[in-house]
Length: 378
Image (cartoon, rainbow, N blue to C red):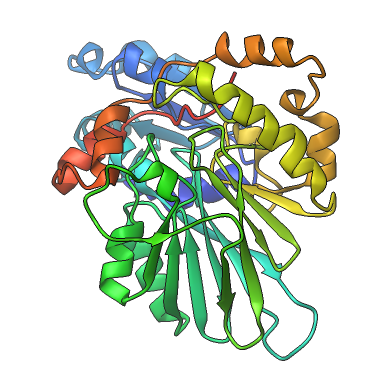
């Protein structure tokens, strides 16, 4: 029988830039919309139903000198095909849990210490949701932790905090998310932490929250690592960034490594594009150019650094990110409003879930989030 390969094992192959061949047995439209991406990966897409009578026709298309991974939506079809390939004399693996598991994998990556003095210098940990391009953060000091833009896979953060003996004291969402379901409120309820949300994004929410406004400060631990809120609208009207310890700039969905945020997920692109430009071209340019930008998403697998993290200095982005280098305002406006990708799957339902207006069960939440993130201007 074929062996399972876990999502963590696949993630490590992506980070190490290893070669791998993926046989994706989902339908072509699903494969074209969203797949496992790696810089050194090769692909063959043959729908499962075309392989029910055997795999002989594809044997000569599969390499024998590298790992072959069979992938499907939930696991069952890939196990069937992988076993047929094993019976035909090939050594292959299948993705445990399929693309649904791939969508949910979070890889914690330490970004290093914060302040330079004291026995506990603090730390920022980036949780990379490799299959969806979502990035969330845990800011740690003196046994305390602050979470930013947590996903619905709340156990990952809670288990990580328990393993490191951390108390989660504050949970932030930089904005009302439309591409994925936030786990922030659930984590706050389970830990007793304060849940913060920008009030301009929250007029219709059904729950209590702390108002995240420009200039809000939160201290983490006794070493006084400071998390300062910076109002930066454009992706949403309430979008808020954070400056952490005068070293990191958490930009939410306003600024990415290779692109900028889209302003249309509330149907207000023409209204919000001016706010987007002001945040990018004025607010951010007044900050220290040495700040390291930590976005809430990445778009391309090539944006991962050698250690798997997604981070870059602000001055590098000011020089190289096309969205930050369009001098004419009208040209910028056209570039943003005329290059919007398809809207995220079920984004209206996701927004209403994050408002507390819907309470879908776990399986419904998984279905709502299937597919790539689409938070950036192309």
